[in-house]
Amino acid sequence: MVYTLDIDYMKCTGCQSCSVACSLKREKISNPLLGRIQVARWEIEGLHVPIVCRQCEDAPCAQVCPVNALVRDSDSQVIEIDSNRCIGCRMCVIACPFGAMIVNPHSLKVMKCDHCQGDPLCIHVCQNQAIKYVPLTKSLYAKRMAGSRKILDSIAGTA
Image 1 (cartoon, rainbow, N blue to C red):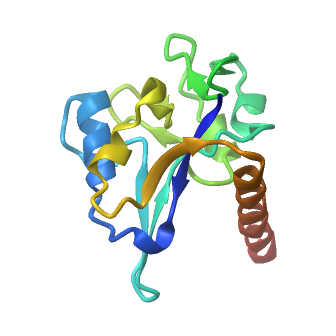
Image 2: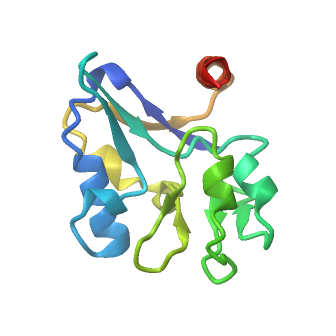
């Protein structure tokens, strides 16, 4: 079964526990800027939006990678980065419509959420349960696609 991160933006308080935990697990340092999940803040609206890879079906990031460093795992359907192949060109960063690709300032290679190989730490540290790891059902997929279409339409409208 394929799983996905389901984020309830209305429950997010912007505490960045998810980003800090991710950076500790993956980079061995407490730095929310190194987490593979980032929290965008809309202060005037009072919203905090965790930004994480949506594992797009037609993944623009993987399509533009000149060295095929982004590959979808056949079992989990998660797009993973082969850091040995990544040349740090950042084409995937530019191509990602959600801003989910991050550049590690130390290695200069890209990073993104890979669901922690099936046990995402962010879901365990989120006190408000704004992040859940759930099976990707057709209804959730439809919800995600409708939401991402709204985001893409708003981006296109501002260009």
